[in-house]
Length: 140
Image (cartoon, rainbow, N blue to C red):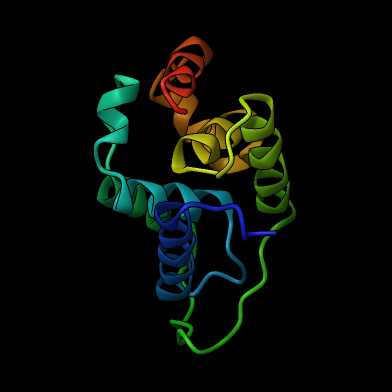
């Protein structure tokens, strides 16, 4: 499933796993992916015209959930159904744009449309679909 993902998108998923593990989450969810994307692609919020960073989202998520014990990086973690939908939809977003690889921009577009908690966070920051569409048109 992830063979078409860019190196940066792979790294975002790695950081999502790391964030979920550090917070003791039962599984990797959409907000973890959003944090991962913002960690590896810090210019993306500027391109989207929103003031958003990984640390503030991480702190916000920690306040909303009961932290559990940290989960070691060596322990495999499952993904939520919402995150599975995001990954599947990101492929569709890239395919419609005839992009060979799935990039962080495709993941953000998918999070915006199908992202559960992350979609709410993006909406709270007043991200608009036309802004995402504009960003996607700049990708080859």
